[in-house]
Image (cartoon, rainbow, N blue to C red; front, side, top):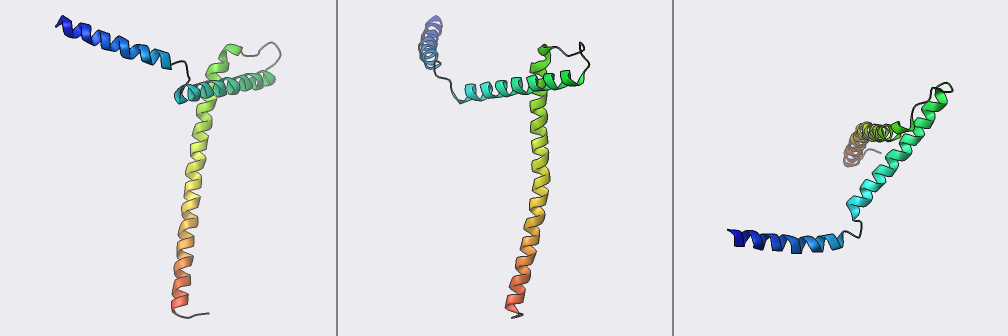
Length: 115
């Protein structure tokens, strides 16, 4: 039993050491999370400045709210984008259906030799 635990620990340490050495290079997930963090900070700072422009002098909100406001702003933008995509999907379907109807009418008129 203990021999298996020692062997397992040795393998884990050996494999783990190689993984620690590879962590020096940022991978795609780290870059994506860094981008999201930067975007949230930028949006949050912009929202704090915008709210502080609207509020009277001396009544501004704290810059501590920049990060939470940024994440909420980012989520809101994503939701708006998906809403636009959903609305665009409906319009695209209408265009596709009208296109198929016109194509079928053109084929029928061509078969009937109507000019």
